[in-house]
Amino acid sequence: MKKHKNVIIIALLILLFVFMVFYIIKNYRDENEDIVKVTVKNGLSINYLDGDLIEVDTKEKKYTFSVTNDGSFERYYKIDINDLSAVKNIKYSLKSEESKINIEEEKLENGNILEYAVINPGDTHTYTLTISPSIQKAKLGTLSIDEYVFEQEYFAQTIITNSNVSQTPKTSVGIDLSQTDEGLIQDIDDDGVTYYFRGNVKNNYVKFADLTWRIVRINGDGSIRIIYAGKTNNATGDALYAGKSQFNTKNFDPTYVGYKYGENQKLYDNTNITSTTSKLSDTGKYYFASSYTFDEATKKFKLDGEFFYGDNWMNTTAINGILSKFPYTCASSSKTATCDFMTQLKSNVTSGGAPTNQFKAMYITYQSVNYDVIRNDTIDSKIKTFLDTWYENNILNKYDSTSASYSTYLADIPFCSDRTLTSGNGYNTATFATTTRINNKNPSLKCSDSRDKFSVSNGKLKYPIGLLSADEAYLAGIVPYKSNYSNYLYTGSAWWTMSPATQAMDYNQARNWYINNTGGLYPWASVASNYGVRPVLNLSHSVKIIAGNGTSTDPYIVSKK
Image (cartoon, rainbow, N blue to C red; front, side):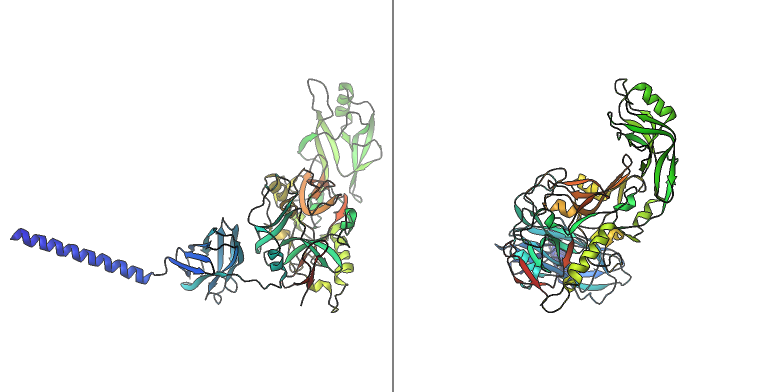
C-alpha cells in the first residue's frame, strides 16, 4: 500500500513539473512573442532573428535579421527604424556581406538606416545592426523592412531600369581587362549603396548644358556622377577633354599632389636618407661639382665650386675622383643648370667588381616641414584653377530654356583626393593610400579621411566640380599597367585623375595617378606634366529624364521639372 502511495506521489510531482515547464514556456513566449518574427511583403521574406523591437540604451545593442527574395525578379528594399526619429544623437552601424553594406557609426536621421538595396531572386541578405551606447536609456523603436519603390521619373531609377545590375563584376577587378558591357555593379560609398558602370558601356551618355557626358556611377545619395566627353556625342581623342593642364606647376614636394595644398617648407641639407639612384646613364655626359648653392627666391639648386665634366666617366678612376672631390650633381650636361634637389653621390654600386651607373646617394631638398602641411589646403592647384574657370564659362553662366543656370542642376557631393600616407615620412618620401589599395587590388569608393574630401559645403571648393578618382577608373575596368582600348573611359591620350600616387626620392617628384594613351592606369605622372582634363560633376538626385535612352545616338536629356 505504501509503495502504491509513493507511485501516486511521484506521478503527481511529474505532472506538476510538466505543468510548470509548460507555464514558463508559455509565459516566455507571450512576453517575447517578437523575438523571432517572420513576415512576407511583396515577395520578400523578412526574418527578424532578434525581434523587431530596437532598444536604445547606455550599452551597445546588436540585432540580426535577414531579407530573402522569394520571387522571380530582382527587388529593391529599404530599412527603417520607426518611432526613434525624435530621439537625438543616435548612432548605428549596419553590415551585410551579401549586399556589400558596411555603414559605420552613422547618425540616425528621419528613421532611415538604408535608403535602398537590390536583391536578386533566391538570394538572402543577412544583416547585423549595432546601436551605439546612448545617454538616453530604454527608448524603443521598431525595425521595418519594406519594398523600395522608385519614382520612375528620377534619373537614378531610369538608369537602373535600363541597365543590367549585378552585385559582382563579370571580370576580376584589377586583373582582367573589362572590354565588354558589364552594366551596373553595386558597391558602397560614404552615402550608402552606389552603382558604377564597368566595361565597354553603350548606354551611359547624357546631354547636359549642351555638352556630352558619360555616367560614371549613381552615388549613394541617388545623385549621378558624370564625366565630360566632349561637345558632340561622337567626340574622340583630345576632343574628349576640356583642355590640357599641369596638375601643379611645382613637383618637388609631396604637398603638390593635392587638388589644394599648403606650403611651409625648409631646406634639408643634412638628411640621413640615402637611397640608390640610377638617374645617371652610363653613356650620358654630366657635370659634377665640389659644392652647390641654393637660391631662396627660386627655390632651386645649382652646382658651385670646382667642376668635373664627365664625358667618359664610367670607369673606376673617374668614379673614385667624382666621389672624393666632385660628389654633387644635377644630372645635367649643362654647367649652369638648376635643379629642384641636389644629389650627393656617396658610393658606387658595383657589379662583379666593375662600376655601374647606380650610386648610393643622399638628397639635399627643399620640402615641407612635416606631413601635416600637405593637408593645409590654402592654395589652389593649377588644375583646380583651370576647372573653376571652365565651370564658370560652361556651367555657371549658361542657362536652360527656363533661364535657370545649369549650376542649379548639380549636387554638392565631395570629391576625394586621398592623401592618407601608407609609407614614407610624408614630406620627402611618400606612398599614398590609393597606390596601396590599387596595388593590393582593393579599391574603395569611400574617402577615409574627411580632410581629403573636397566640396563647396566644407569650404574647400568654390564650385562643385572635380576629377575622377583612380579608384573609380579602376572599378570602371581600367587595369593598372595594361592597355585597354575598349573601355568607355578610353581616350587615346593621357588624362588626369584626382588621386595622389607617390613622392620618390630618386627623382624627387610628386606623382599622381593618370590614364595613359593606351588606356592603362599608371602612378608615374609628375604633377608638372601637361595632360588632358576631364571635368566631373554630380547631377542632383531630383533631376529627371525627359528624353533619350542613354545611347550615343539618343543620349539622356535631363530636366529639373
